Length: 230
Ligand SMILES: [Mg+2]
Image 1 (cartoon, rainbow, N blue to C red):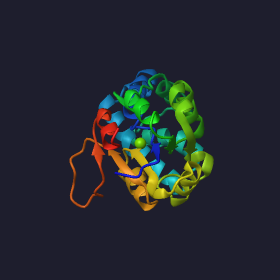
Image 2 (image 1 turned 90 degrees about the horizontal axis):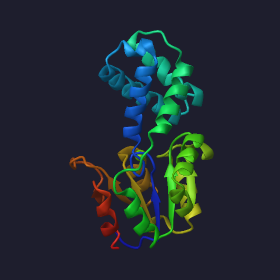
Image 3 (image 1 turned 120 degrees about the vertical axis):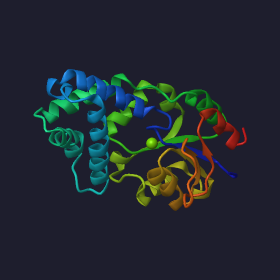
Image 4 (image 1 turned 90 degrees about the vertical axis):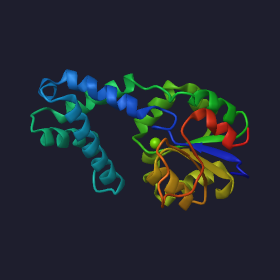
């Protein structure tokens, strides 16, 4: 990569270990709801991952409301598991537990500090505004470093929608080709960023598969400053 003048970061599963927080929150919820406790946690987890993916795809396609996403995933979960439980209460308990378990990805902060010492940086994230803003409040050093913060819900479209990348490009104040996007999602970050004309650093530990975009990858945050030549 070269000619980078601005670095945008994805948040969930790039800087913040969303998957770990999700797993621990599901375990907490499993212990808190008796109807759910009767089902093995492995079944709860695998079913949740399927319905959560489904509701977020529908939310992104604007065929599902925000509340239909927030609590709707638990309605679908309980339906699939054939149990009776209050989906609204489950959503509240889950989101509370999820917030209790936020931690940064290992090595992210020290690499982030090196990068923010050399480049202006921003955040480009999908998610509910209050949750993403709460994460920034929890890690104020991140929030203080960003000169641009773009949250899908606040703009009305989700990654990989080109409009969201256009807004982010404008806010960065540089040409699209001068922006590097650091993210983990092939669909939202890699493909979305490439379509916007951005450069990409793909955070993934999966082996490369034929047909995937040919972009720089890293699986450990300590590798990222080197990709930027710093
Ligand atoms: Mg992500």
